[in-house]
Image (cartoon, rainbow, N blue to C red; front, side, top):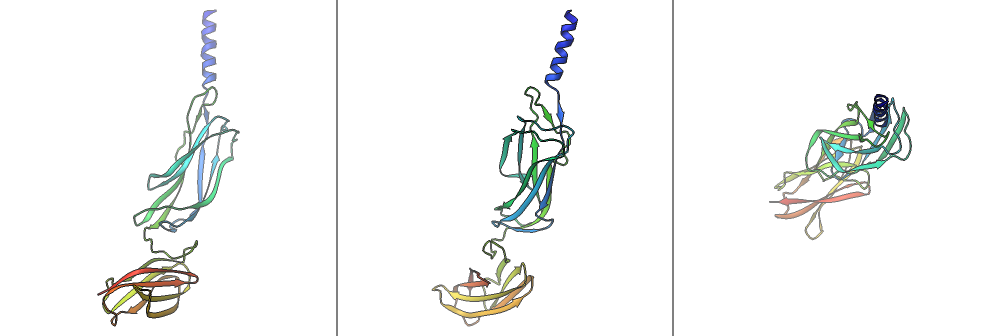
Length: 241
């Protein structure tokens, strides 16, 4: 009789801590591979998390999700306790939103990922395990630029705006990269806001472009060159020797 009770206790113990296996798959559709992302400007992010099974997630299972950039976690990791079942081939998360990242480096091969974790805990019959971790992250390689000289109100129209040489002597080239073909206007103002070089207007194609300013007649000092595209404009510092 004692032996039978021992066997029953073992069976009850095994049943109580029975393990369920799931396979969480993260698929990222936005941003696209090699997309350019400028520091401080929002970009579209979309991904899904699907339970490939074979077992279901149950109420009480704990989940965590978030983003990483080159292996470092961005911001806070979000966590929640499920209050519903998630069957095999069902989605846990469908994320579609904008993300704004501030960073201070130039890296055309930045690895941006969305990750998802199911906590392996034991609580009655709620033990859950995800033995396949290779698909717990959905990633894209992005071309990330820290150049804050970016023009666009809500939608970026130009990046990498720069003056070279700066300080200038006889001339300076105002360079920039256009996202789409645009009409660009470049002007120069002195410290008091007076126009010293009349607007130069040029219709230019997408990609790298430039407009040259003749500074040979200007006195030495601090100036501001203005780049205007559509209804968006910004002024940047220029030193003239």
